[in-house]
Amino acid sequence: MVVVAALNAIDAVIVRLLSPDVHPFVIGFARALFGLLVVAAAATYQLLSPVSPVLVFGSMLAAFVLAMVISFKRKISPPLILTYAVLEGVFVGGISQYYEQM
Image (cartoon, rainbow, N blue to C red; front, side):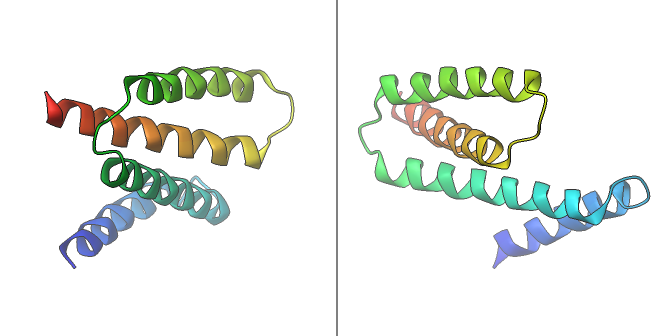
């Protein structure tokens, strides 16, 4: 319940700051990407008890390469952007688990 309240508060601040300049569709897409990142991070954190450094740093490198592809591509590709959010979530969850095990 506390997490939902915190996310709603953050969301309200973002919407209040961006609403005059940014289209509501873009704000909704950003919310979805952040939610996907959080879900992927939580799943990785919970499911990988002995964390694999290959998976963590592999997802980091794959996300970086994908970010470069998205940046230099002429057309916007939503599937690539969703894949990037999942890869970043895997990295965040994996690196969190890795630092907890240290």
